[in-house]
Amino acid sequence: MIILVTNDDGDSEGLRSLVEAGTKFGDTYAIVPNRQRSAISRAITLHKPIRIHKITDKINSINGTPADCVLFSLNSGEFAKPDLILSGINWGDNTCLGPLIGSGTIGACWQAVLDGVPSIAFSVHKDGHDWHKKENWGTREELVQTVTRVIEELKPKLKDSSFFSVNLPEKHVDAEIVYTHKFQKRKYKTVIEKRKDPNGVPYFWIGGELEEVKEETDLHEVVVNNKITISEVSLSIFKSD
Image 1: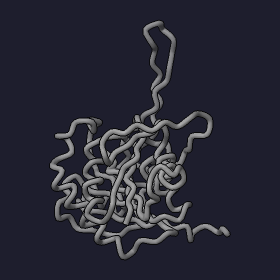
Image 2 (image 1 turned 90 degrees about the vertical axis):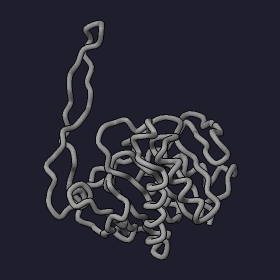
Image 3 (image 1 turned 90 degrees about the horizontal axis):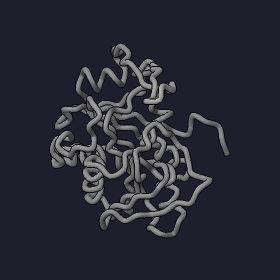
Image 4 (image 1 turned 180 degrees about the horizontal axis):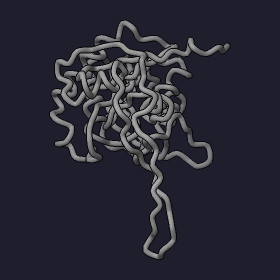
């Protein structure tokens, strides 16, 4: 197989772990945004030029979104068209309905399935925001081991009309895999904080407070039961031509 790896964080330890896992299944390369593009869903860039930058022999970045990265791999002619798209590994789980709609990591998979390419999104439960520090990810060997196990599990189930969202608990080595479609509605309650800049001019910062974890949901399975959750999202739920 030819495999594209992308994400919404840019170059990160999670990305490099996923690239390493991908090489066990085929010829793997990565195209990622050149900056943080979380919560951007399936947005695409229509009103400015796209430029590509080579980071390593296998990793490239563009000044675009995760969905742009998928479109670029399929339509630019600069790369071999992928047979499988892997997105992630995202810092922070993408459980609940909100990320299913709004995550940039999952947005890449929405674009992939619209173009008829099987895809899998990977996210790992983490606290804090220090995703740029390699040591905070744990060992790459363990991440690659877990992701490889999940890809082997899903490989016979890959379809061009659906994608899989995989959420890993923080302690994911040898964790049980469960399939679920019971999503918690949301993980965060929206909080908009009013602040003032040094000149006294007000501005606003959008954030969130954690909601209570509901039992038997995808979020509960990951953060309480320490299980790897897999959710399949299929275009069959929509009527189209």
